[in-house]
Image 1 (tube, rainbow, N blue to C red):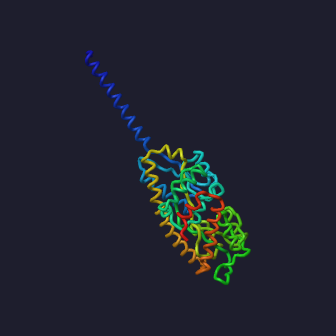
Image 2: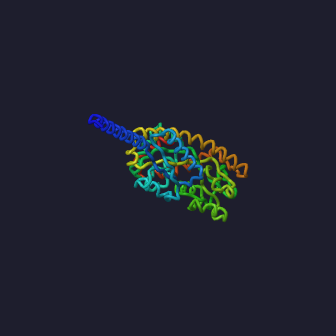
Image 3: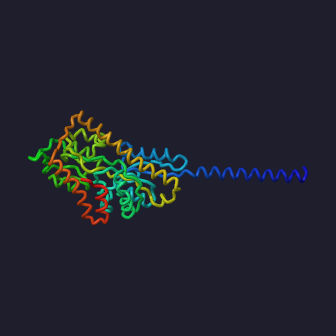
Length: 337
């Protein structure tokens, strides 16, 4: 082989190796372009709320193909629900979905969502979401991305028919009602005795008549089979769901601007979708439980206004008493009664 041929072959080999190297680099760039976020939920995957979060995950994954994907890793079996946000703060997990009121003692501003009378979308438009982002960052050390499933109201359910008052209200004096911190003071104002029972133990408590009723949103009442024992629902509904999607701040900052845009746009879009979904679901479940024999105890007129005032005032008074610097702005953004 001539020297010229040898040099030509060497140049060809070098060019081939360079081309191969560039191809590998390009493929690696493509592979690394899609970022992954590991997420968990405060609820078992079988519950309607977790199914709603799955809808948010699916929306992000659809919009974020090739850019960002959320891996829904599990629920309370991974971390206790009231410790999940701390796991996000520490970076053990990237994203979490669950009630903000699990952290009411640290972040009293969660009561603004409990006592809200507007949708999540309306709260955003009025500047409330930005204020809540500040509270989540300052008090919990996480970045708030979305307020999902707004509009899901709570009700008081009883095993036996509650007595009525002369003005058309309900008399719960002395009744033991399964409760949680967000409505303890409301129940007490109605004369009831709040009883703290973990969700997994409520079914047995109802079965044994350990207590006389429970406070809970209509969503999930059938999933948990509590409707087997709770035969009366007191209307109107009060409060609304306080379900947040949060992410570790360092993880958020590590994402590309394109990935951030995908998630932010999906959050705004899914807040509206989840609201509409749960309104339809609440209507369907109400119809189903009535067909199964549950009776609606309807409070009307001035008695209903008094009932709702007791409920909403309990949340806003609690937030005011906490000394939150955001009280006035949050009330203006989220409360319209």
